[in-house]
Length: 247
Image (cartoon, rainbow, N blue to C red; front, side):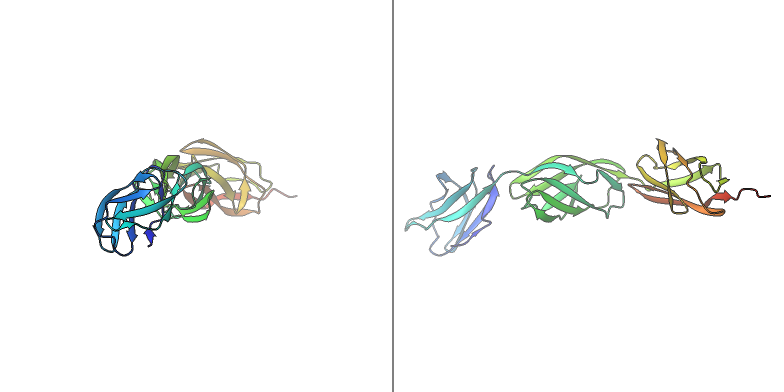
């Protein structure tokens, strides 16, 4: 006599179907000592809504002919999330993040706002999920759904792709050390600034500007790239290294 599913929330409310023989006219289905609400019944199956409970309980079906052998049903508590590996990312989605917590082994969905994504379960304390595209920039709640229920409490922020408008000044010595101001948009979550591929120290001023100090470079123009959690923007030949004079 199979039972499907054989696990559900400690709060109850799981729709459970028990299949077998001679089940018609079922008068009671018990999860441990608690009665379940019967919603459908025929000679080969009985469908019920599980009552609340804890742990592992025996499930039995009672008909005019007697009571069946027991089957185990496993009650699962709601998931608990402790953190996201990344709390922001591009509006287009597509990046993979890790969610840590407890009770995650039966995770079936992760919702970013109203949009659901299917996670990959690593273990009871960790799942990964590819972030879906967002409807708009800004924060959305993150919820995880498992056999034990749904848990909210974390926030993920969708970020615009950055843009570079101006670089000032646009040239400096090959020895580096030039203080440069970069203006644009979507710069708040800047993670790196490079000049010709070489990393530069930087400081975010606000969403439209940041300052950086050029690293040493080779004479000639180089691309300037700003990378944020929303993506990357590149100013082709945005800065030129000037060779020092020689006599």
